[in-house]
Length: 107
Length: 117
View 1 (cartoon, helix red, strand yellow):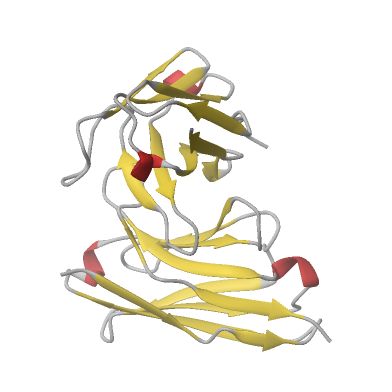
View 2 (cartoon, chains in turn cyan, purple; view 1 turned 180 degrees about the vertical axis):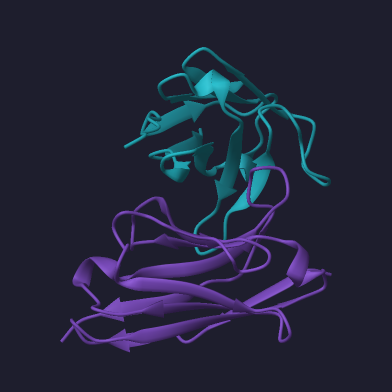
């Protein structure tokens, strides 16, 4: 089965840049999406089709995807960005697959 | 405004059944594939099942294949998940969701399913 691996946690200082990786076999050949989830809330799509931001998502969120790794970058991180983040891809054999999740802490 | 309202969660017995519903509004329901995604307490997101816009094609995670059935009623803008042979590991919040760009743009608030005797 297809698997996506993320680091369990990432810490970042306010105003700095946070990068969250998502690794999977030939992930660059698929479209990657990213979700933000705050405690007690439903997930929110922040990046789709590798690099696109849905309406209403701040410009400080950006994405890339190449080779075996997709990356979510949060530039100028704010306290409100503290949340769990999940990558997701679609594979023809296993359909939708979510990453293991990364807890972002803004110190 | 897009709204997805799940219902039907609650306490289920091991080996028993529950039926989840998701009432959709604010978009053309019959034009979109729909999915269920679940999240066990303190755990990550897990895709459960998807159904095509017409209902003619269905897809399941290996963990629920043969036990869960996804369906939809486009005349009533409603998505369903019939859950049979429930197991403790099915305990989770179940989200109704859909999207257009290979991601899930819209999510419901979720309904909690607890499987316990």
